[in-house]
Amino acid sequence: MIQEDAAQVMDLAKFGAAIGAGIVAVGAGMGIGRIGATANEGIARQPEAAGDIRGGSIILAALIEGVSLFAVVVTLLIALG
Image (cartoon, rainbow, N blue to C red; front, side, top):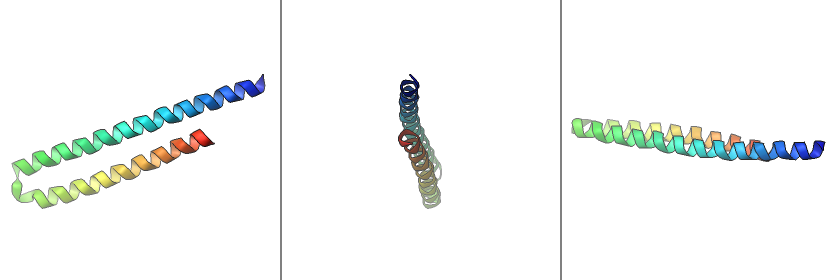
């Protein structure tokens, strides 16, 4: 009986990790999409600042990707642990 309960808990942990990884992917996509949209809007308003805006948006996108990769690794460790 105890082993069955432990197996159910592990199944729930794997399900939670899968949901967490999905939420991370959606959140990262939304964040990078918002960066791209506002960067394009900023470039349309001030074309002479296109280089600065582009550089800043690339740095922000890289930071979001790093955080999302870290979150996915944590969820996979939860699922496998």
